[in-house]
Amino acid sequence: MPSAECLPHDYPLMQRALERAREAAAMGEVPVAAIVYETATGNVLAEASNRRECDADPIAHAEILAIRQAARALGDWRLNDCTLIVTLEPCIMCAGAIVNARLGRVVYGAADPKAGATESLYRILEDERLNHRVTPITGVLAEESAALLREFFRGRRGARGAGRGD
Image (tube, rainbow, N blue to C red; front, side, top):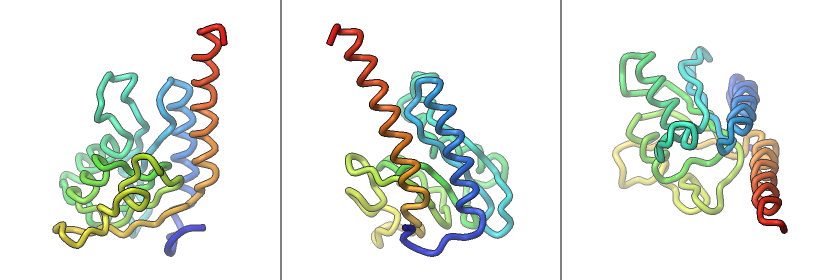
């Protein structure tokens, strides 16, 4: 159940992000994807999935890549009138980028109890000590997002075990 009111584009774009996350998993990436869209119109500015493995880049998280693309598309680093859709709760690094990009809203699927910086471990997006706050909408297609991650990591654990003769 989402934590706050969803807009008409949130669910279909989360479904699209889940498709992108499945594509990332097929490439050996952790299945996380992000989409940035103009909140008022639904116009998609950027889509990205994790690329840490493919690019050997520790900061190639889906959110970072999508934020960069959206800023280029708008010709402005301020994304105040935009929404970020992401399949997994953002980590500390991504939450910081979200605040610095001045995004208006973040909609995400699965919570991340080990690294989540929106609600699980920290509440960076709503921290009153920062110069910008972002409205988080949590739990949109959360079970689908969580199931995709569980399946991916179950497969990786199985592959490692098979390689060791377990």
